[in-house]
Image (cartoon, rainbow, N blue to C red):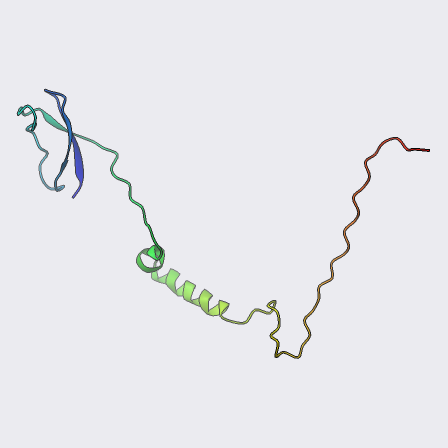
Length: 112
């Protein structure tokens, strides 16, 4: 059930009331007793999804779940770029990188 903001036009009293959406708006002010209570339109309450698993268990479509399963199955294969195990007789490949160029000297007057 939502919380509604009310404001009395007679005495200026502002309050929040908790009642169902199907219930009619309240009219009688609890402070002055006059039927001048008016329901205000509020911005609504924000909510946060906290914790893990919301998308995985609640809101994802079946096609997404099937694609995720295929991706997980594909990632279970051994990676070719992973280092070789100790029991492998194949030596590990070493990658050679070209040597970096030394930093160039700033231009200026040459000394004789």
